[in-house]
Image 1 (cartoon, rainbow, N blue to C red):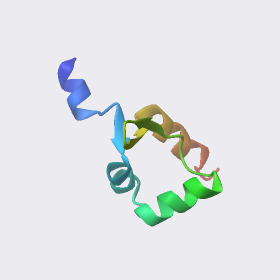
Image 2: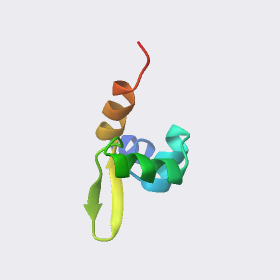
Image 3: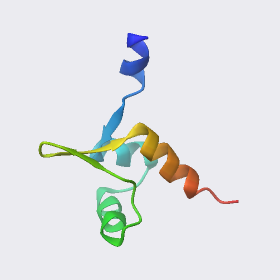
Image 4: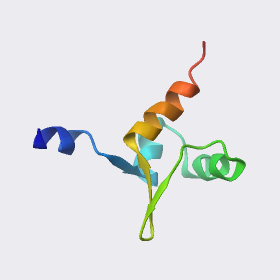
Length: 64
């Protein structure tokens, strides 16, 4: 169980999310500004995208 958490993070940093989805940080912040990006969680000064939020965001953008 502990190894599952290591291999599948609970949340992504912005650079990790961008790498995982193949978008640039510039695109990420442009999407956020337009209200079209994934929901984020702020912890201290860090901006994180929860894994579930990332999956839902991507699923909502899948082509039918």
